[in-house]
Length: 316
Image (cartoon, rainbow, N blue to C red; front, side, top):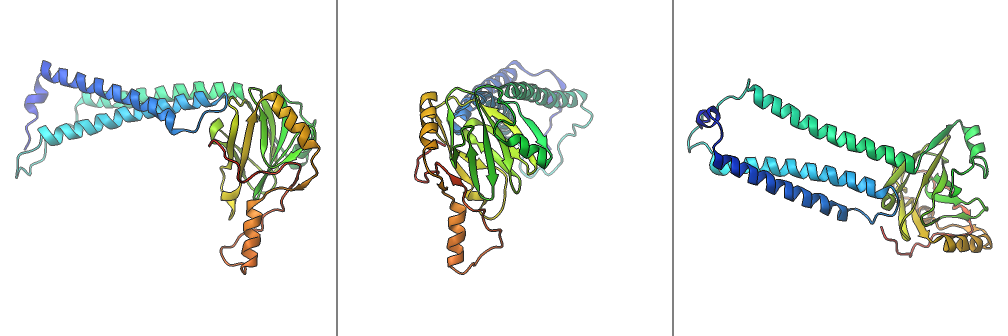
């Protein structure tokens, strides 16, 4: 049986304290490095909210790394230098009733959880100031407010009507332009009316680090501020049926001048059916004899002035 009485009876020796200090220092340096690397695991940040979300993710990554490496180091040290002798099948010394150890193991998780919660609340408050939302329930009232001019924009550009359905996205601009890809002006707050026509959908743009559920019968006022030009991906974050994976489109962030030019050019385009991958897949399925899983037919492609270009290269 491994005898721990000698080690636990007296104070730790300076050599042991030095090794523990060095181990904690190396663990801290590795955790800080891992937290810094975590920024590279995410898509390019492209909204005013993204840096705050990334910093919160880095904090959680750093804390998780510190705990993981600390536990692995203790386990490794025990296996290498404090193993029971060969053929020693006795149990180790019981540690139940060690008040100091129990207090330590209670305080450490409490401090970690409170630190994460405090920082998460600060980030949540900051995001609320960057893009607040208002939910209007009741089908008739909600749809009336969703009409152009129903609710004044809080500032910047909008409101843009975002319509999610099985399985396509449609965007209606204040000047009447319909599109299946979302165009936004750079560094300008854009406000939205989020509307789901059939089932729950999720308005999720990974590069913006923002996600908002869309509930049938409700209109949700939402806003965000894009900060980087480019073409990004908008995904439906809520599973919505058989062709859910095809419910994606592009978000184009461009300078305010280019955005206004696009709006004017789009308004002169005739209406046409927008690109709808779900509809194409469903028609192919019908042509092959309608074999496969049970599903609902995709909604007809929306009539739009500008359709999504499926060959366009996006950043995320």
